[in-house]
Image 1 (cartoon, rainbow, N blue to C red):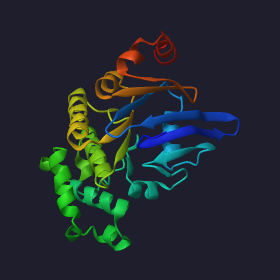
Image 2: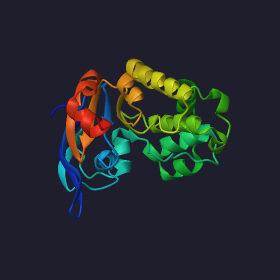
Image 3: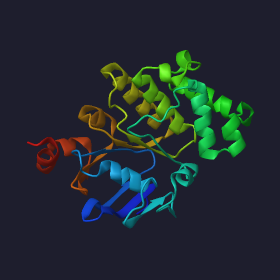
Length: 247
């Protein structure tokens, strides 16, 4: 395997239950890969096993040529792997700007820097860059907890980018977001991909969002990879329709 991210034979068991069962896939630089599947198919467990939230039972993960299997989330973040979660990770009592600065300090700063979020370390300028990129200028000084859920989602993704990741895992970015903002989010991710060569892996239940955004789609069922292909191939596959769409 030679992709930016290479996952080989990854497995995670809980007793006799195989939540992830021998999953292998690659993510190429500049790719947007979607991950879909019915509830309980192992998508989030796969994310967690790749990104250090849980230790895999078997298999390995290579990122940028290095074996990173079992690395901690912080070590992976500092190596260039970012992520968002289904549950928002924003600090509601801090301003949007300070959320961004704290996120960068967590990814790469010292303890003192995390405590004081020192803008003179260059993170203030980087936060302003993200504020402009994500269209958050009108809310930058507001407390994140005062924003709409969709706006907080944008802040959450912007926080993931503050560590200058080479690859970002997005866990259900469109969930709970109104249709207008979903469209804006899709446009933003496409722009980041086109202009900054940003690479993404996206778990999402919104099929229209996935199919319009992703270059390839990986379908999971019962902890295994059912199929990987281009969106049009996934839409037309009878096994996918039966396992995921129930038809």
